[in-house]
Every structure is written in C-alpha cells, then in structure tokens.
Length: 478
Ligand code: 5AD
Ligand code: SF4
Image (cartoon, rainbow, N blue to C red; front, side, top):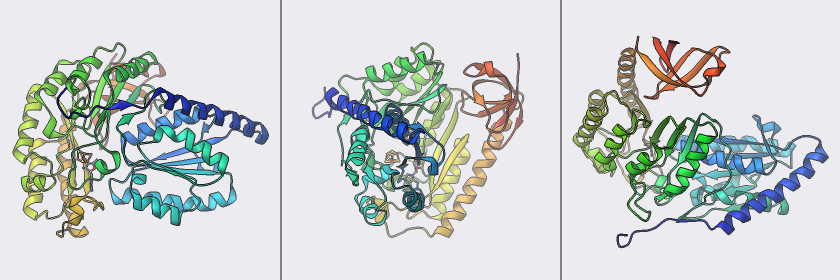
C-alpha cells in the first residue's frame, strides 16, 4: 500500500440491517393502509440526468418494493413521488423546479401524498435553502451520499408528519447489499465506482458526488454473477471516471484487471463501460478491451473541446494531439471499434479559431456519435468566474455547425453498414410495434427487425437493409 493512499470502506452491516428494519416497519404500516383504503400504495420515481442516477433510482425502487409500494406511471395515482435530480447543466435544474411547482396542487388535493427529492441538486446548499423556502410541500430532502438511509428518512416523515432534511457533505464509504429493483433484465447497470477527483473547471460533479470510491472486486463480481443467474446478458459498468478504478483499494487491481475478471463470468455475453477519461486511458486497458471477447467494440471517450488552449483551461490534462493519438491507438488495436464522445460548445474564452479546432477533431476522429452540450455556468466551479462568457447566440450558432458536421459523419459511418450482417442482442419489442423487435449491436447501434418472442435475450445475426437517423433496419438471417 502506497503511503497516504485513502482506502474506501463499507457502511457497517449493522447500519444496513437497521435500514432493513425500517423497510419492514414501513411494510407493516403500508399493509394497514392497503387494507383500510382497499387499493395498493403506489410510488413514482422521476429520474433526471445520467445512468448513475438511473441506477440509484433502481436502488430506491428496490427499497420501496420491500416496503410494499407498487410502482405506477402517473403522479396523480401516487402516494409517494420521488424526484432524483441532476445538476450538471442549468436547464436540468430548471426543469426540476418546474415539476416541483406543479406538485403543489396535487398535494392540496391529496394531503397524504409524500414528496421526496434527492440526487445531485440536493448536494448544493443554496438549492436546499431554496426548496425549504419556496416549496414547502416537499416532505423529504436527501442527497447522493445517504441514499441507503432512505427507509429511515421515510419512516421519520411518516411518523412525525414533518419535513425531513438530511444531506451529507461527503462519505468515504459504500453501502453494499441494499435491495435493488432493475428496470430491465437483459441489460443491467453495475456501478463500480462513485465520485470524481478530476475537477474539470466547468463541472459540478466532483463537488456533489465527492471523491472517488471504488467497490471491491468481490462485491462487483457477486453482483454480476447474480445478474447472470437471473438471465442478464449485458452489463454496463458505471463510474464518473472508470479508468481510476481501484486506486483507492488495497492491492493493485486496475480497471483493466476488473474487465479481465468480469470477462470470466459465465452467462454474461457483453460488457460495456462508461465514462473513460482520456488522460487515464492506459495501454493496459486498450489491451484488455482487445483481449476480452465479451468487452464490446465501443468506447465513450469525452473530448470536450478541440483546442489545446481550451482543454488546458478546462483542466482536462491532455492536448488535441494527445487525444487524436489515443484514438489512433484505440482504432489500430481494436479494429471496427465505435467511438462516441461528449463535446461542450461555448466554454468561456472559446474563440472562433478554438471552435474550428473542435470541428477539426470531429472531422479527424470520426465519432459514431457525439453528445453535444452548450456550456452551462455552474456556480462554485472555476469556469463560472471567468469573465469571458460566450453569448448564447454565438454558442447556439456554433452548436448547430457542430451538429451538422457530426450528423454527416454519423450517417457516413452508418451507411457503411448497409448489407452487413451484425450480431444483435435482442432486448424486446420496439415501442411502436407488436412484431418489430429491437436490440443493439456490439458497437451499440440500435437495430430494429421483424422477430419473435423467443429471440428476446438471445444473440441473433441481422442483415442491415436500411439506415435511419437514430437506428438501423434489418432482417434476421436464419
Ligand atoms: N456545461 C455543459 N456541459 C457540461 N458537462 C459537464 N459539465 C457541463 C457544463 N457545465 C458535460 C460534459 C460531460 C457530460 C456528462 O456533461 O461534456 O462529459
Ligand atoms: Fe466532471 Fe471531469 Fe469528473 Fe467528468 S471527469 S465528472 S467532466 S469533473
């Protein structure tokens, strides 16, 4: 163990048991309610933001189903409404405030309704103050670090009928063995690490999600083996910066090592992961991707900007040339790999020349897809204090130019798939049809095709016959 290495610990078994006791207490209470009102008690969780939040909501669902709640799809039918929030960009926050305001009327018509709000937004003190002052109909406020304590907080809200606010600044531990109820069974999210130490100058995440904390190999492997037993075929390993996995654990397991371990789990057919930081993408990881047959040929590698000057100001710790060099290395080791990225347009001080460098990276890297964002000022981050903020109109105009170029490249790449036979993991019926099935290729492209129920959960070969904007259309070759 190197000197000064911080080791992540687990929340104690007693603490976790305590939460199970609260789950049982609420279950008994709910049984009483159900028999007196003659219908189920219902909840809805509305999730904003990234896959990490989706995975956290699956945990809340697991706790709630243990408490005897059933999930429903309408706020008006709910006895409990939870908003799991995101604060990466301002518009995500504004949306939440809009939704919270709309709940006031609902609470007036149903005073027994419990409204809870959690997630990244709650880790900001000014947000909690604003909610306390403006949205008095909110019953429970909690953060990202004490999600596992939700049963206890809910029990307090039910028994005291008063507002419960509990947000922790940080934690060095991970809560394992809490229940989880997943949205899908063929594919699953598996969080391998929490937090981020990178402090990119525009980003609020390190302030609200805390320092990097890795789960142990044993816990991750147990979870993946259990998923495989339950019929799951594809896992996506989640973390803000998966490439730093293991740095806070005893021993020298790396993310590459973790991939090699998980590649051995029987029953799992595909492994994906996100997000990778270019500065930490090691050769060891590229070789693990190349060698592990279950690890899919897809890499999400956010570039954020093309200009080395802007990258430096973003505190990304790589240059445009280093990024392009990395892409070359990845492409030459893993032929046919699909690359996706995140790009921010209009970072403070971005000149026309800087933006042209972003277009140049996009043209050279030839991403399969890019998630593009207008820079959003986040209070508390260094970039928010930069006086050279870019006017919205300039940002939007650059954004449109970027999108036009990326769409052209995405279409060219997808056109190259016409006539090819691709392996698709069948996920189920497509939303709009009773005979069209949907799934994804190893490169993460959506493919729709005529199929049958027995194909769900299986790997099939589909010949691509038509390229649409967001998906491919194909035919099963038997
Ligand atoms: N403004 C715009 N986009 C941002 N992202 C993170 N912070 C901001 C911000 N302040 C984007 C980055 C990141 C993705 C998850 O969100 O591109 O990779
Ligand atoms: Fe934010 Fe950068 Fe951490 Fe990603 S790596 S979560 S962009 S600080």
